[in-house]
Length: 200
Image (cartoon, rainbow, N blue to C red):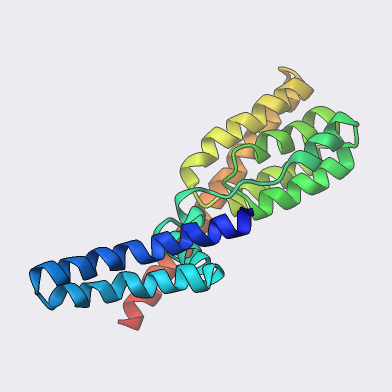
């Protein structure tokens, strides 16, 4: 027996069994509503037996409706290529991909440590590091994550700058950027609140 034939018989059994049970109950009890109940599994069995791709599509659609990965689980950034570039020491290319990943997947906790490490420890570029931190404040909607990510950023800055005046200036710059971002978010919330009241 070929796998195709075996699959056809299995689908046929699944399709026929529920309807057969309902019809047997109708014959033994004489109650007509059992025949009505047989219609439901018959319809599903027909789709399963005659058109399995249709039943599979319907099942996939129902599963996606009941369990939505985009809602239940935050999407993860594809970082395999980034890790390969980092292993090969291609820091500029890695920084470019990480900046794009941070923009598209801001809630992926694996992106920001890599980005901050590259811009500070490998490139040692203060301008790029500033841009990376500003990007974090721009795209990460969860403001409660800002302090943690900013501390992580400063840890990599400390590895590069040491415990000197440069690190103190960087800490002050980070505090200013966070403060400005907080005020900007507050203005946006106030404007949205006014528009919501006006729209009522």
